[in-house]
Amino acid sequence: MKKIIFLLTIILVFLAVCSSAEAKVQKAQINKYDYINIPFWQKYNDEILINHLDNMFKNNFDFKIAAYNIEESERIVKLALSDELPQIAFNGYVGRTLTSSDEKFGDITIPDYAQYRYLLPLTLSYEADIWGKNRLKTKSSKKQLEMQNEDERSLYIILTSDFTINYYNLIKTDKLIEIQDELIKTQEQVCSYMQKRFDNGLASQNEVLNEKKNLTFLLEEKNNLEEKRDVLLNQLNVFLGDRSFEEIERTDFDSINTSFYIPETIDFDIVEKRPDVIKSKLKLEKSGYDIRVAKREFLPSFIISGNLGYNAYQLSHLFGTHTGLANIGVIPYLDIFDGGRKVNIYKIMKSRYNKAFEEYNKNILISAQEINDALYSAKTAKKNYEISNRRYDIQKEDDRLISIKNEIGTANIIDRLIKQEELYLAEKQNVSNKINEIIASVNLYKASGGQDILTSDNIDL
Image 1: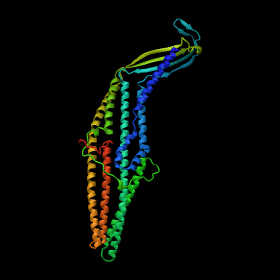
Image 2 (image 1 turned 180 degrees about the vertical axis):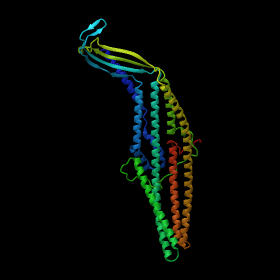
Image 3 (image 1 turned 90 degrees about the horizontal axis):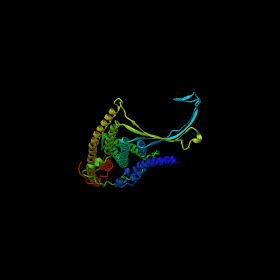
Image 4 (image 1 turned 90 degrees about the vertical axis):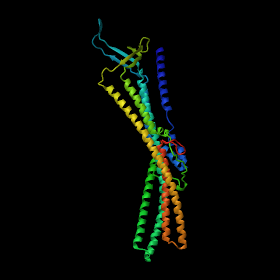
């Protein structure tokens, strides 16, 4: 009975250790909804966009695939952790040695030997991690999991940013098609009036043909815009994981708000918070662990092995007082010659560490360049929108003046229509610049690694 109690105690201790390890891994899980960064997108004052991002979080297939990749990496960490723990196995045997020739043990003879044997042991083995090699392997696998988490965070930042860019491009295309329809109507009127002037001998046939040719250009441009709208709708449905490819709800262009502030400079700390830079740093740390593991492979290993159970030659005596089986021992192991395998593995790990170090420095430099490029683009887009706003106001004033001239008879209807077309063209440019400013702010958000830097003053890179 004492042996059974002792055995159960050992098993319970092992189960407690395993449960503790499991809890530590699960505790490290992250609230992935934070990757969407809803507080940032609320700056655009578009509830429809927020609803789309919520649906995207629930239904996007890339997000689901990334979640399974994380789950796989977590299991790999647990596999590495299992190598640090003792192993318990049942390795029983029930059999009979058949009648055979005499068995001799020195001067003792056992004639016509035959025997049953009942062996019911638990086999325990544990590699004593006196050098910390297995612990380092677990730390290395945890770094790989953290790298996978950064990949997932980067995926969320990229996909939500790309969705938002396509969403606002769709709104822009809707508005451009609306303006294009007005342009086509106006050009049709120009063609009609020019044909009447030709019929009355006041215009040449070349003038008529030129206006009709301009109309074909406008019609062709409308077709291209409609194609772009259809493509954007399809892409947005893929982002949302919607197989029905239904119409995408979106806000009206005139209700779009672009009142956010773009900083003049950006703090260098922003670079170090990007997922790809963090991943490079984690890779460097992982390579450091791998080098240390490769060094410890040169040292001897010690495996503690033992058996605990019952060994009997009669079934009725299996759990008797004299059938107990217990042994324990230490098995030292050291490679004497392995053909240079461990040396080469160590050198490979050292090369990977050096490569990871250079990749880390390169990523910092490229990240700084990408953030600065995005910042300059955002500033330029904001300035261009301000300029096109002024130009649009000037064009509206020009259109008002030509309207007055037309009313008092100092300008003809064709001049009036041409000025109206120029106003529509100025409006199209203004629409594009307004959306370009929004897209530039999204690109700045993406380049900064999903950090909200649109309302803060920072130090130059």
